[in-house]
Image (cartoon, rainbow, N blue to C red; front, side, top):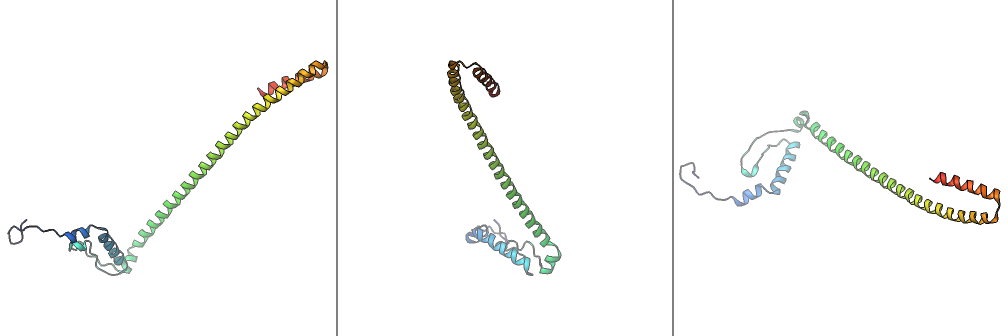
Length: 160
């Protein structure tokens, strides 16, 4: 690398300066500087640790307010709030749907279980009823046997 005088100069590392300028402390300092600039009339130094001033802007509180930057930040806050509100509504709807889904599934399981129980109870009832009918047939009471047979036919048609 050539210097101003024209001689070749060996380039040396600026270890502490360069490593600091890319670290979190540098970013924190720049952030604090920006916050300080927003509310006071101070000079804005963009990259202070590289020792060059990119731009110098003097901003006072009145100019900050008149330029309407507070509207921009206010809008950003409203956007953030709306986004969080939407996430909350979305989460609530999702959980509501999961609850309804779980409830319907359990209801269907209950109905399915009841259909199974009902089927077994019907089988048991028919078994008992047929046994009773056979017993009554042995008694040879015609009118009672006729009524019971008709009842059994009606029950079988109804249950499918």
